[in-house]
Image (cartoon, rainbow, N blue to C red; front, side, top):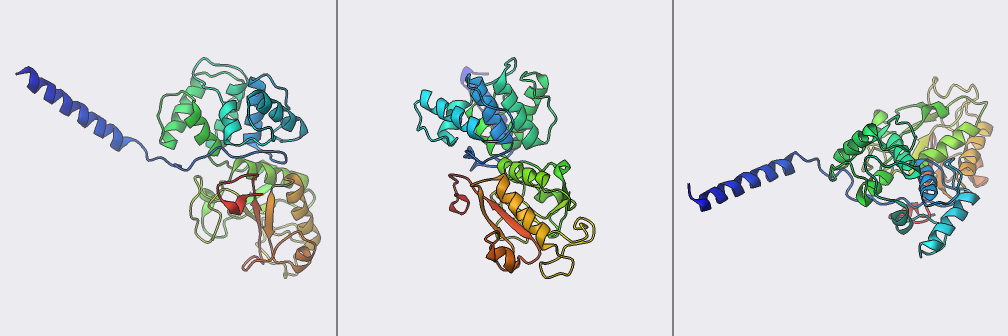
Length: 323
């Protein structure tokens, strides 16, 4: 066999293998991924990750998942030393400076940030111990496969961005019960980490009236969802009004006109939603005229029987979700 023929056969074999690998690789689940903008008033897993990343850079901030005054001060200090605009807003540029490259054997607060994100976005139970061990490597590789990005177990800027963008799943122990009024099932329970962190905090503060029923939020990677004109950006969550018998999780959904509608409790719920996310509630659609008159909710067709909470960020790719 001539040398040329051997070279051509080797090239053909290599091409076939490459084509096979391309065909077997998953499609990128979220090609429009971005670092979610977080600032004062936000809560959730992304905020907690930011707090651990600040610690990685030697800055002191609480690790409570609440973007309060101490976290704002730490972010501003980091921005100042990094030559960034000092505005206290963790947007793409600040995220990009915060996140280090991590791989097996790494340890410290940045690995804790990674573990927090993997637990929240992939529904895992990794210990948040700051050790990049075999379990973390496996979780990173599984996420990279899920996201359709390079599977190497190394957490660089692309993996961080896709992981931070990925939606979160609710913590039902917060006092939320799962309802599926539009037939979308548990697949429609995903929303941004901030949206869930903020709603869970609101529900935890709303006591004495039974659990809060969840309607639909969104799909795991966003996109159109049956029965809704929005809910495709991870920033919209439907909850149900409260009943006078506190049986909203077992006795069915009501409207604001129903005899068992508890206006006082529903008012308290809307107030809790707003209080848990100062500056990050764009609106609450719900057609109770009294709550509308009080400035708590906004009228919108087909919102007699649920509260549609729309969260917002300081900067968002869609103007619908800009605060």
